[in-house]
Length: 310
Image (cartoon, rainbow, N blue to C red; front, side, top):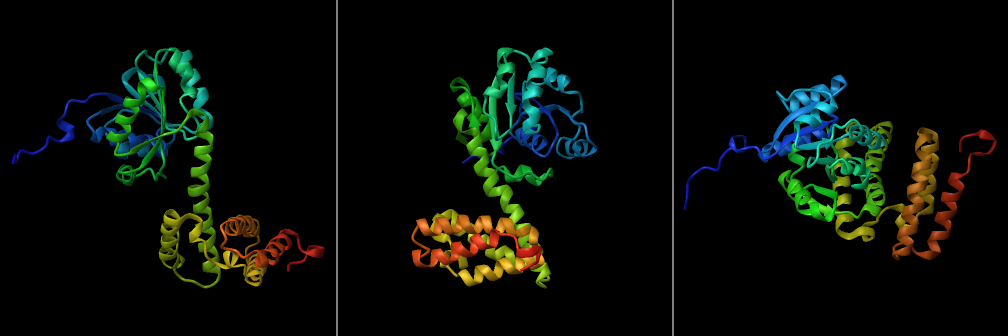
């Protein structure tokens, strides 16, 4: 059995020079992850003070330069900008001649597939859409979280192996998403992750109002178990007053929310209706109880009479 040590990734010959256009929370983390795999970050573009700090933290000694210069220096370019900015950025880079033939151009938008890179494709670039299904903090912990993270991947067939290799080198798992399904894929992730943050934040605020000193400690085990049960069992994991058909309890909830946190009523009612529909469809909510429950939810949506609180 050999006892020789594996070479440090920093000592291996770099296979690709890597540039980042847009030093938000995602780009520097992906570039740092590629660096661990033996690639060499060489340039990053950053405008705000916050993005410059992120670049300095995750990509120390990598120069901050304009976007066109990032492309000039890089074999692989990560376009990590907001979704609405991406089409215009790609068009502008292609029209100004910044894109080089054979250059790997990767965007990380969940909404778009590879077609948004068509202007660069016509200039000879190799287009890849690699979207990490992960939330980012803009700190070094993001690099660790990429281990085992799924990436929504869309690319031409001839670049399939290259796309998979890059994802695997970043520690991720490639999941192929058809071009036409990218918006639906992204909506699903936003529904599950982004809305979860809103729900948890609202729940913590209400618990504080109810006198709970450590709402995070109270919610942690409960939400952890709920998430685990949901991932394992889907709708069979539904519990609580809506799934049981406890119309009186739900009515009391709505009344308390109207009194203490009226901004949460609409969200509560919308989620309660969705929960009732799913519980009813899967046989968890008894039909004879559903009518009263749905009546409460309908009444709860109506504004109080004469503008008074109920």
